[in-house]
Image (cartoon, rainbow, N blue to C red):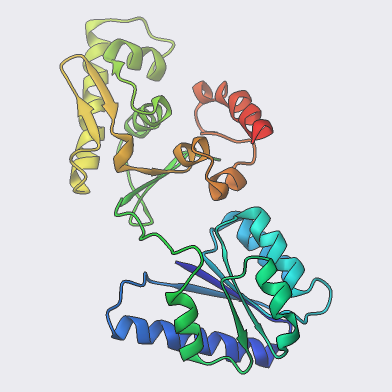
Length: 276
């Protein structure tokens, strides 16, 4: 769960952050089902907006009276980025309560905000936060292709083994034959028994790397075909195609930049953006 706190007054922001952290500690001590939290603080509304464009914000604690863009305007912007962001207003004045709830706020807290009030707000969110998935493998397709195990880069001893995994991700669960893989990985070589043997070595290397992570069921292999089980992987490309706001915002016109065969997908993704 990602939480942000926004207040243009430094001391007030520190007090708000302290109350949020105290509420989180209490939740962990009681062993509630509340997920682990990341708390990020901002004293400028535009910085909070930029953060929300690249990171899913589950709860936003916002001061209302701020110089420049006020909390009500900021709430509208955050809702435009992700309509399921829970907005909790923290202010010294109750005159804003009616307007705040007209924006479908999750809660309205009066300053000084207490840990107890924050805890109650988190327990009664308008949009309950879903538990994080248990997928250990995270795949990044936008920009350069990268694979992460528990958020640490996964090492492939052969570049072709990593490229093979990239291509299987690109196929989104559709099976590929060894001949197809040979044509993609070694486009300038003629098909031969030697080349097929080379592809089998690359496949074995890729599978060993994934098996060593404990993710033994990510690859689906039959005698002549191989594919990936997309339900076992957290992938920005997959989430983009499902309309996930964070993934859509993460796309900047680059897809698996390190592989030339992926270039043709960019037009498809650009067109998808226009239709969203």
